[in-house]
Length: 219
Ligand code: AP5
Image (cartoon, rainbow, N blue to C red; front, side):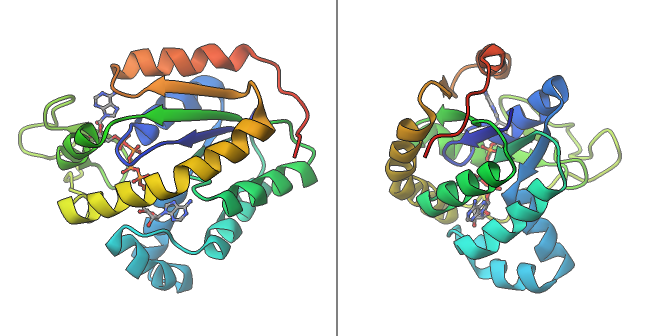
């Protein structure tokens, strides 16, 4: 079964993806991580995405859908982290899964208030090599900000108040339309989690949904 993580910035999608991909044999597809990798390589996708990433705006759908199509074609059951984010992306994903004869995905909706979004992102430290994240209060990093593998931890460039506000607004603007679409097409294959709960409680709630058998896709 493929899984979609949807929620505001900082809700813990990446944290949960790292835990659950191992437990359920899924491959994480984080469009944010993939875009940052293209930007690091300074290739054509990276150059196109740069201005959007810097400002916290959505990268155009056609760029994102091309990236995701290539990931789907590599096979495996996938855990989409941060995709889809617009109704157009959701419709494209439905088409791609149907063409490949896949069952309905499970949608996990992370709910988190704006104040906590800011608290999460203003305290986040990331290991750019492994993707492991820490938090100043909730999961403190080593005091010297060097991770166990020797990699210096960094703050993400878009974890600045103004950009966080933009990312949060963008999320709110798209959320209702996307959720409307999925409520109609996924039926019971949706689980909502209170993302304020401790990490293991959130993982347990999501894992509990995995026993449900996949149904065939409906439009
Ligand atoms: P992306 O990288 O996807 O960022 P995001 O959605 O804003 O989400 P984050 O990665 O910031 O947060 P998260 O939910 O993974 O939280 P985390 O687990 O790290 O996207 C970045 C940009 O790329 C976008 O702005 C856009 O420009 C572009 N983009 C990406 N996808 C796109 C798409 N589909 N279409 C168009 N553009 C796209 O946790 C956060 C912190 O909280 C950490 O410090 C962690 O330790 C802590 N934490 C986690 N869980 C808990 C918990 N339960 N309790 C306490 N602390 C916790």
